[in-house]
Amino acid sequence: MTQALDQAATLAKTWLEGLDERKVNSTASLETLRSRFSGPLPANGEEPVTVVQTLARDMQDGLLGSAGGRFFAWVIGGGLEAALAADWLVSTWDQNAALYACGPAAAVVEEQAGIWLKELFDLPRDASFAFTTGCQLAHMTSLAAARHAVLKADGWDVEENGLIGAPDLKVLVNDQKHGSIRQAVNFLGLGQSSLVQLKTDSTGRVLTSELEQALSEHKGPKILVLNAADLNIGAFDDYRTLIPMAKNAGAWVHIDGAFGLFARTSAKYSHLANGLELADSWATDGHKWLNVPFDCGVAIIRDQAAHKAAMTIAADYIAPAGAARDQIDWNPEWSRRARGVPVYAALKQLGRSGIEDMIDRCCAHCQAIVRGIGALDNAHVVFDPQLNQGLVRFARPGDTGEEGDLYTKEIMSRINATGEAFFSDTVWQGRRAMRVSVVNCRTNESDVTRAVEAAQWALQMDKVECVS
Ligand SMILES: Cc1ncc(COP(=O)(O)O)c(C=O)c1O
Image (tube, rainbow, N blue to C red; front, side):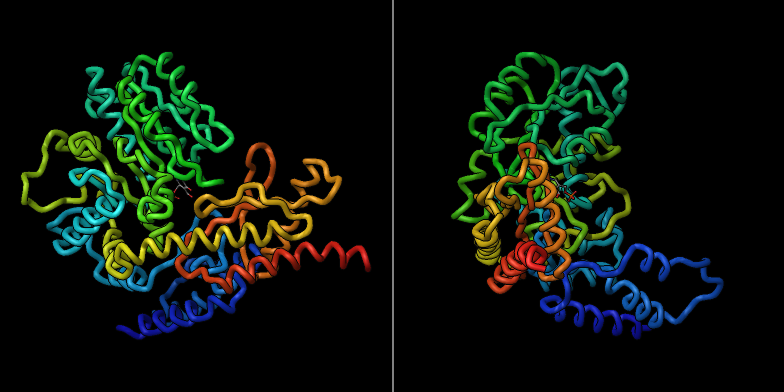
């Protein structure tokens, strides 16, 4: 019964122990991967241990080293040891974390994890919360509560009547928003035409004049979505100015804090996120900066009644104090995994001080990578990180903007092909740049050095090519 599990544990440990040495990029091609896994549906079964062994063998060179410290692409955290181990147990216990009755301990642990997160982020202690699959679903959950509340204030019951004939609801958004906001708006039936883009200044903050104008133009129900660290430069909006303006106009304010909410855990960086506690809802991720395994997002919502009305069929029922918390009342799914349990384990492993230390280390490493690469010939710092996100561009003297864009892509591909470090790119202010994101608890000084050396090597290839 446990042979396959023993095998999986051994394979997992070998994988983790090899992360520092293994190439961080995938080396198997799409054709190779397809050829390994395609074929007819097996007519007969195999021994579980054989299934696990061959699966791991055939997947290995098609995996990215994103769990390790040399992965700086997108915004992808690693896995703290206690969180990963707890995640294994969650699968093993296989509780349906929809109801207290289906998994009493899982419900209580998730409840405590939510309480701790509100404390960690210093958000209203009486807010409700939900552990979702990711920040995208945390946005959807929060915006569903927002949709309920602002339409109710206009005399419309959206859960009962849907949106046909509803008052015209507008979603005012920072124009540097993440794509997951657009998706959430679509899922909620509001459509892209409900979005009103608010222009930002050169530091990624919504211009006050833009919000002023949007509020005066849209007298009906509205939601304002602000950033707590946008994906390119980690920009934070001016909450103390914008949130009171929006609230005075009757808007619900939602914060995309996928990773930026964690700035509030650090004495060094919390000033960036001052004032966001004035909002109505916040979405963040466990699988980014808290370093719990995928999948884990969190929605925190000030108005419990609106949250519950949007998520549960017993819309106006609030559990009496002291009663168990049924996750189904707060989550968009029915059956679900107890993804709050690894969060509990992560918070226990690190404590407040460990989290602050992890946040500060990631930021320092990001700054060192951006400055280290930016100091190389033909490399340019586009954005020096104020948190854990920075931008670098590669361009030779005399390159046009387009040539610089292509060269940036080329150098980044060369770096990634070394297997020493892995980055992703973006377009920021109209120009391509390589993005440096550090959210992995494993990243250390040696990883920083290896990333800078890989960039140096990639840039020097030009000189080698010229000589030959
Ligand atoms: C700023 C921001 N918001 C939202 C998301 C979506 O998060 P998730 O992928 O967990 O749904 C991301 C993902 O990278 C992000 O960077």
